[in-house]
Image 1: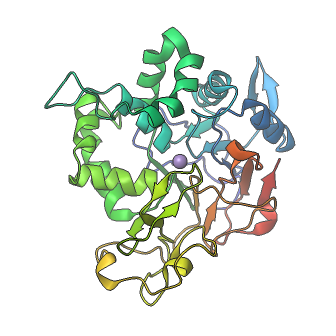
Image 2: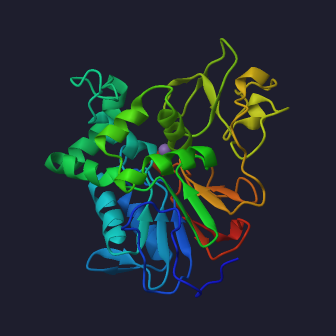
Length: 333
Ligand SMILES: [Mn+2]
C-alpha cells in the first residue's frame, strides 16, 4: 500500500503526456463525482476539503483532485464549471476524466465517415434539449472546448487507486489504451468515428468505460430511466457476477419496479469480467445514486455520483492509500 508523502504520483495509466507530475510529495487524492454545471456546489465542496483560491482557481497545498467526468449539460454554470476544472488541470493540481456527456458532445460535432453531412450523434429533439445549455453557455468558444474534451483521459490509476466514469472493464481499457497510443490519448476525429461505428470493438469498449455495462430486459419488459425515457436494459453491478441473480438484485440502482426474476442466461455476456475483491479501490460516477449519506457499493467500489443534477449532494472521497473504501471518507455538500 502506498504511503502518503512517499513518491509523487506515477499516473501509470494516464495516456496523456500532460497529466500532472507534481513536484510535491503525494498526499492523497480527492475523487470528485459528476458536476453537470454545478460550479457553486463545487466551490462549497472544495472549500470543505481545504482548497484555497489562488488567482480564482482552487488548489490544495498537497492533495490532487481527480474529477470523474460529466462536467457539462443540465446545470446552471457549465462554463464556470469547465473553467474551474481546466484551470486546476492546467496547474497540475487535478486530473479530469472524460464522462459520457463530454464524449456525446464531441460526437455531436463529429461527421459520420460514410455520410459527412450527418453527425455521428444524431441530432434528435431529446438530445438537442440535453446539450442546448452547454452550447449556449460555451457560445463561440464551443469548438475550442470540444477540442479540450478530446484530450481528457478515459481512466486513471495511481498510488493504489483507480477511477473511470462508469465501468472498470480491463479488456475495454486495454483495447482503448492500444487504440489511443498513436494519438497520445487524444480522441481525434478518425478515432471518434471508429468509436461511433455501432457494434465495433471500439464502440463496445467506449460503451463499457463511459456508459456502463447493461443487461437487456426480457422481451416486453420496459423500465423508465431517471429522465423519463423508456429503458430496455438494466445497468449492471459490473463488479459482481450476474449468475444466479435476478434483474432487481443485479441492477446497480434498483427499486420495486425492477423484475425480480432470474436473469436469462443468454442475456449475460460470458466475456465480461467482474471486478475482483482484491483489486485496487475504484471510483466511478455516472449512476445517479439516491440518498444524502453516500456509502460504498462494495469494499473496493464506490460511486460518487449522488445526483447533484437532481438536487442531490455533490460527493467527494478522500483517498489516502487505503486498500478498502471507507464510508467515513465520503464528503457530501
Ligand atoms: Mn455519466
